Image (cartoon, rainbow, N blue to C red):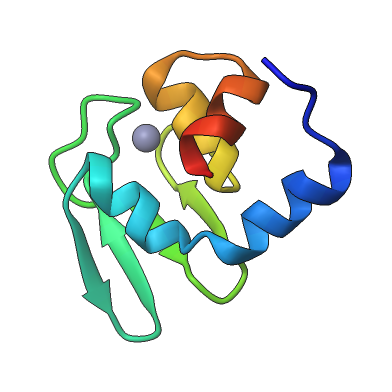
Length: 89
Ligand SMILES: [Zn+2]
């Protein structure tokens, strides 16, 4: 795999809509200015994960899993960071 520069990583992250990307894997629901979802990283029954399209981050208030669009794909698919970047791109 070709090496991805920091510049590209940032450009892709800015272009990627975190709600779109997470919505590709799990169901997300709009709640005011942000989105909520059932957390896939713990045994969740109420939507504990909130997604901020503005800050481009997600955070689960129960298990503490959180980060940016790459962190989600990495954790969800259990893949490495460069693989996650490729997936998001
Ligand atoms: Zn969680």
